[in-house]
Length: 153
Image 1: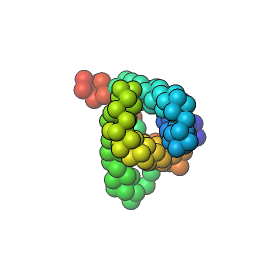
Image 2: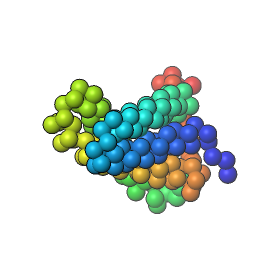
Image 3: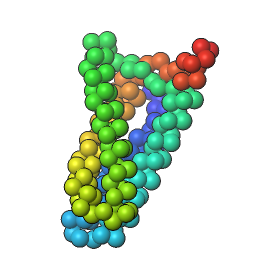
Image 4: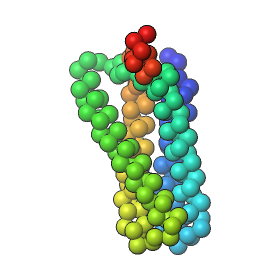
């Protein structure tokens, strides 16, 4: 079984991002504000790298369908929907958290930061499970690029 390189790299980036969020959370608990800021910015950079790889791969190469047993497809689809919801919420909350931290709006940042971190960690964990289901545990199904789907080629 061969494991595709781009999904592996993008998943590694999201794992690094989630790990950095956890480290950054620990830094702020210790009142290491500057270290927290740098760690969270590094987490954001890895999240952006993930998104760049994921989105360009989706457009030009495509998304891979679930290749596991038919009786698990409904469960996989529900789980994928849950992951996408977490990831989308985590991205929006992450941008807001970064912005409020950058602008030194501590009251708002302190309220949403911990919630954002939990959502982002959940997104990272569910993302790894999606990766494992698509590329490691089962062989991925068909991959169709967005461009081919639109153009019909």
